[in-house]
View (spheres, rainbow, N blue to C red):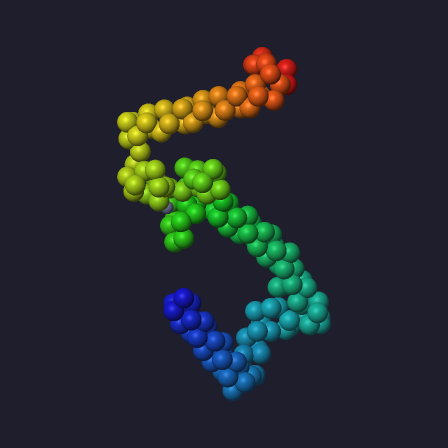
Amino acid sequence: MRLRLIAGCVLIGVVATAVVAWVLHASLVNHWLAVHTGTVNEAGPYYGFWSGFGSDLAEFSILGAIATGVYQLVKKYNCHEPGCWRVGTHPAAGGQFLLCYRHHPDFQGRRPTHELIEQLHRQHVAQQLAIDTKLRDIHQQLFGRPADTTPGTQ
Ligand SMILES: [Zn+2]
């Protein structure tokens, strides 16, 4: 938060300095701007602009779209822990978050070992079996008969 405040103040200072420099040296800055946007030494300023710098505006929008796509891709796949730049490949909280191994609560900051993977797999299978058993009990209570376990029949 403090860093953002400092960066904001620096940005405002740079913009204010640029505006003051432009006001003080208007003819110099205007000539530089006219040369770099292509509006001098042409049949007209609009022709010079649109055949020069202005024709690149569409390319800037394409570059902006590509940059936005790359940003969204990075935001989707990097670790959801604030400030972490690693790739998040481990879902947490039922898939709401993608975390790296360092920030995933099951891994405690270390890479998952084979034993930990086996342990988590066994826990997952036991949890799924408990859910399945509970659903069968509920079905038995509601309909008075065991649930048909044939796939595609319900
Ligand atoms: Zn992380």
